[in-house]
Structure formats: C-alpha cells, structure tokens
Length: 468
Figure 1 (cartoon, helix red, strand yellow):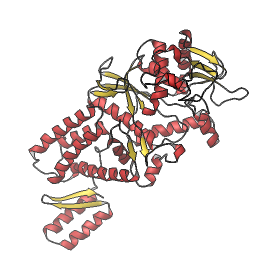
Figure 2 (tube, helix red, strand yellow; figure 1 turned 90 degrees about the vertical axis):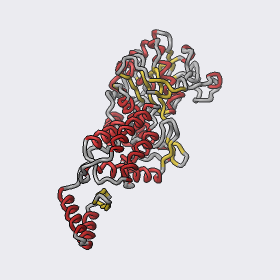
Figure 3 (cartoon, helix red, strand yellow; figure 1 turned 135 degrees about the vertical axis):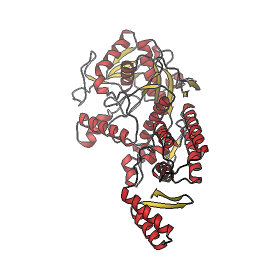
Figure 4 (tube, helix red, strand yellow; figure 1 turned 45 degrees about the horizontal axis):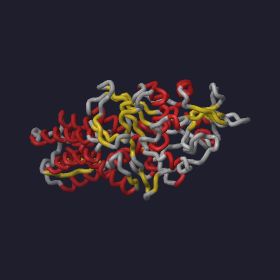
C-alpha cells in the first residue's frame, strides 16, 4: 500500500515498524461547538485511511485526540481558549461544554459509520503527561519562560519548519503571526500558558512553572507517544495543520525523543462552499443536522466525501449532495437484489466480475486512497447487473461482495432489511394477476405497494421490486 507523504512530497510504501500492526495518529476535534461538514469530511477521510489499511492486511492501532482544553483562537498563542469561549457563549462551565460536544462528536462517528478509533484520549485526562514532556524539553534546553507562559525556543531546533517549507527569515519580519515582544522568535510557541492574574479559569492546573493550562500543540505529542510510541507509522490531519500545529508537534516531539516523530504524514485538503473555505465565521458552517433537515441522509454525505480524492479540494453544494443521494439510491437498489426472488442460474461472467471488482477496488484504495476510482470500479459491476437484469442473485457471492464493499467504504450496503411477508404476498398476487391478464388488479396492487414506498419493475425474468 502506498500513501503520499507530505514530508517528502512523494508516494511511499507503508512499512510499519512492527508489522502487521500500523500506528496511526490523527488530529481530532476541539470540542467547543458543533463540528461543521468541513470537519466531518476530514474525519471520514481518516476512516477511509484506516479501512484501506485493514483491506491491505494491516492491523491499525488508531489514536484520535479530543482537544478539550488549550486550543486558543489564534496561531500566535493568543486570544481565548475555545472551551472558555464556548462556556461564555452558552452560559455553562468549560467542563460542561467539553462533555456535551465530546459526546456529540462520538455520536457523530456512529451516525456517519466512522470506525471507532482504538483510543480517543482527551487532553484534560493527560495533563501529567504534558507536564512531563515540558520537563524533558526544559532539561534539554528547549524552553524559556516569559510573563504569560513557558515557550519552545524554535531556534534550538535546526529543522524547524522543514515539512512546511517555512521561510523563517521572512517570518522573523512578522509575516505569519502577530509580534510578541517577549518571545525570542516570532514562531516560538507556548507549551504552558499561565492563568490570568486575579482571575480563575474553569480549567487550570498546578505546574512547576505556575498555575495554568497546556498549549494546544503539546497534547498530540504527549498522547501519541504514550499510546503509540516515540515514532509513528502514520500521522494524519488537515492541510491547515501543516504550517503551525504539525510543524510544532515535530519540533517538540523530536527534540524530546531524538527520534523521527512520524514516518508518513497524510494531509486532507479543504472543503469549500461557493469557493469559500468552510468556517463558522463565514456563516457556511453546515452541520449534520442542517443536512438531515433538508431531507438528505448522512450516508449520502459519506458518499459525497468518497467521490473526491483526499488530496484535492472538494466543493460542497446542495446540488452535489443531491446527486450523491441519487447515486446512493442506485447502490441500495443494487444491494437489494439479494432479497429478490431467487433464480436457478447466474451468469458465469458475474462470478468473474465479482472477483475482478474486489481486486480493482482494493488496488484503488491501496494506491493513495483513490476512493473515486474504487467507486468507478463498483459502478461497472452495478451497471452490468442492472443491464441483465436479474431478479435475484442470492447466495455467498452477493453476501461476500457487499461485506467487502462495506468494510472498505462503509456505505451500509450490507445488512439492508428484506421487505415484509405482507409485501411479498402482494407481489405474488400481482404476479398471478398479470399471468391471468387481470391488468386492473395488477395496477391496483402496484399502487398499493407504491404507498408502502415499494416500486415494481417488470422484466423478462418477472417482477423486480425496488425501494422508492
């Protein structure tokens, strides 16, 4: 299996440190508000990565963090902690905000059929590990203290900004972030922030340097090292994390351990609405509830995500979501073939096509998670089966291919329920009416089934039902 490594800018073979186990760390949500679909695009793409690794024979050990403290509103380590900001907005404590939106996020994983990570650690549960990491960096001479906190001295780390190709000389002129006269270098970042003088925060802890809270970047290093070791096989995140968050993770982790932090970096591109990046500040932060309120399924959103490659900028619109929902209906109709009345024979070429489709889709996903190509391969199989048409292909072939597709893409094609016994009886009565050329009764039974959201297609093989 090959993935595009952002750090080296080339496709690289996945070669785990301890095969077949492969360690995967992905940057999770900051739980201060409802995630928008731009966030969910990224989380679904993490899921696609893990599913593809499994299909390639690996055993992913996947960690995704939950940022429930310390994510400030500015890359310059300034502004409010987002949890404190959410607490003021809703008139609750930061702890209440963190719990509510953490629970919502986990429910969202299930609603979108995203596999549960092996670990979902919270920053607030790992304050000791973060303090210990700062101590290690302090002992090695990478830190200094100013009035508002303890900072990492980026000048002590020669490769700082390498993955992001940062022009540090230019940045020192104040190009990236607001100047802080106390910082030694403009790109230095906070490891520990002090609580404001004379004020008590909802979330604050004692530390060797003073009462306060950890910087945002610190948690990912501390928790990934704890759960996955000092060098990760794969680190995933959004491309917006490259210049600041991931650059800082690399600096603090490698300074502390003396080892490479991650062997492969996988970055997911942005999603836009009307050519604008999705963000709450622009008013286009569409939520899962917004999607369902317009009558769309979350499975359709998942399919929309799969239709774009993770390294390309995706465009969301209600029109593209509607097209995805229509495409999904075709896939469901195909999956429902397993419940149609059985036939004695099945074209031999169909058996061959099942095997070829499986192999092609697996190869597509192993080639840098090419989900759009995998969907094309699937579409060829569906098109072939729709052209026969076959009233039913029950048996191990259909069961196996549907399970394979669900394991790989998570579209919930497998396990769709059969129609009721009463509906089957109505179909049998309609078939008898057609054989006796009682067309009025046949039409009446068709109308009855349509009120139950069941359509009928008459083929040379007989009746074939489909869901409306």
